[in-house]
Image 1 (cartoon, rainbow, N blue to C red):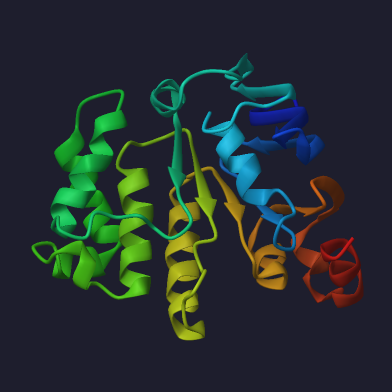
Image 2: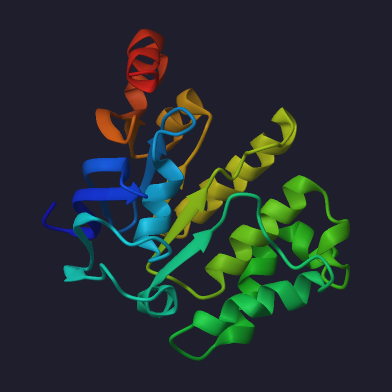
Length: 236
């Protein structure tokens, strides 16, 4: 895509010589929310870790705004404008909500941190209500909102979301997706890894389906009702 913010070109990732991602090419344009779905072991989280520099690709390229970031250290990639919301949230349970949020400012490339925090409290009202509580006493859904807000505090060019609905009750999942919809309205760009295939396809601007580390299909929101095609792509 000519206007792509993030591009993966023929990305290969292997663990101890065993392929985990093979020849993956995808793109995310500025302002898009793009989904990445597939069964366990499909290579979804590995793809995010390769983008963030946590694992080193065996081949291919990763470009941010046209510039290769393959092989850079994770902290350099974060400062280049990519933030990760990891699977399992990984907030600091003994720090307050406000303290967790302020940690997200570490990767900011400019001033105005206090204004950003205030804006995030408006976007995630639950975090304003519990701002002095320890992060560890929040519910799973509240912790997920905190993890997303912490990533957004850096005002990244793109945020990578790894299974934000994992382990949450259906009503709590609804609340998380409502916040993601509000994030989209603010023009945030995101690559969303999710286990809820149909919901992701309906929500995202475009969704890539992986199986066995390879791209199997690309879906648009109108394809969410095509259960047969989703199942075929999901299970390869």
